[in-house]
Length: 409
Image (cartoon, rainbow, N blue to C red; front, side, top):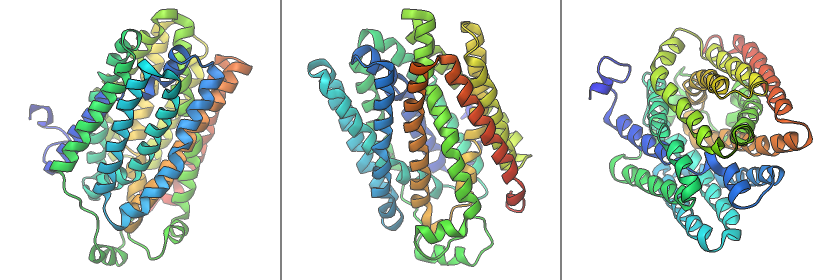
């Protein structure tokens, strides 16, 4: 356990470390999404514009999926929902890999089912993880999950980048194997800790920021208007982030030709290694500042890096901008979920997670669509600039919200 000696992560409950292992495996198996745009354009014959439309569709199928499972996860079991739906997602990844070799025309439709089941998994997984934490250890635990995911992600896209040219089916098979293994560990090792009626009743009498409220999800949203507005603004943030995830591998291929996929893989590995090294420092920084201050700073770093990407064709400069972008990602990732969960009513965690998942998914659906249209109509440079300016506007809104959350943060 030398990894955790004298660190933020010493003394956490055993279940937190197990979830960290699960996140590491999921990160190492993240093959499909980072290479989806290249899979569509290079293996399945889509244009950039068509790939943007398909990426939007793959995200949109997750919207109703998250609604289907969220109430059941709040009322019955987070764990059962998560295990069942992730098993289904893993199965469809395997089927997609098989069909890529024999009936590639069907693969896009199979990918849609993968994202549908992933959408069903998200609210239960988010609530399940929140249940394993408390107000005292939540920020450290969430940063640990994020760190572990990125330790795995340091290897995932790089491996996928090597597989992409020589064995594209491996993108699906590797992703499926990791997902199966991760959910099997959850099934065997981690108990469900969903709040019971007595815990919810006690929470209603407390002054905690996550105190429970009576009524359905609409009553809960009405009871948290500032949080609801914050969540809505993040739609625009995630739209711009998704646009860059979609455009960057295509931009790398445009600049560097056949070396593009491999070099894009190094961008993602740089992203993951930076996360591994700097996440503990980001958590220490965040502990000394209000959460929305850290989120605003993260959005600023996102904006600056993205604004500059369209003005260079240098691999070294792009690598540096990916580093700056990653600093923003670290600050955002270690504060965003923590902020949401801390202000979510205790008995509505899965349903609020579903709403946040829907907004995130909508952003990741709109981002590829809009960026694909921008690239086709204008240029990569214009696409980077527009998304950078959107992030600047989000930063201004987050800064303005700080005063209204002054007492809670």
